[in-house]
Image (cartoon, rainbow, N blue to C red; front, top):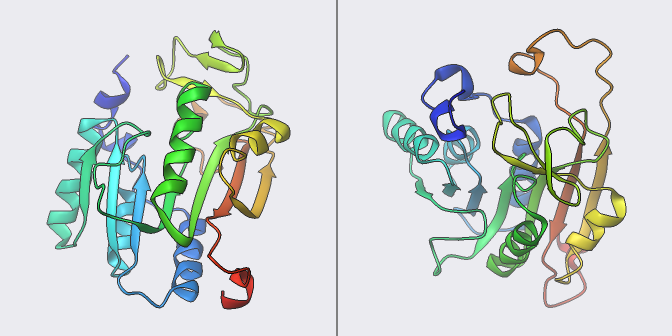
Length: 235
């Protein structure tokens, strides 16, 4: 089975379609900030579907991913489309641009792929890189997901699969209390927290490779508070 990085060499694993929620997030940022272009960090950009989407909207987008082949694919696509954007290979706990503060951070199906201490470090790092009023849109695996408990447990609630396209990749799963604990180390403002529970009634062999439906996941929209207490009114 190819490694996670090697999967990006195959077109079928380079998802081209952005999530609708990401466009809605961009619209929210545009309402809340007069700055143009907005600075948006696509953390865990993969092959760049959301990096491309934000660049097409005219924003200054930065993408990071731990998979060099994914980053290369994103960089290549930016060039082919004549879009402005910067992508770098980096761990989720790292930001290669110390001089940049972000209006928004997108992390779609990424943060669960680490041990809990590294996930916590990543979330704290995101907070520290946001401008006041800046926001994080993220999805994070729920412990009600189909794959919870499968594979080798390397720490409480963190499992590594031995098979499938995500073999060797850690998956950490959160319940509600653990999710709120994750965001308790910085004074985040909680704008929205949802648990989207999917019951896959039928699961044909390898259906994960083609299904258009998401897995059970937490959706979070968090903000770094502004200096004043009128955040909601201004947005």
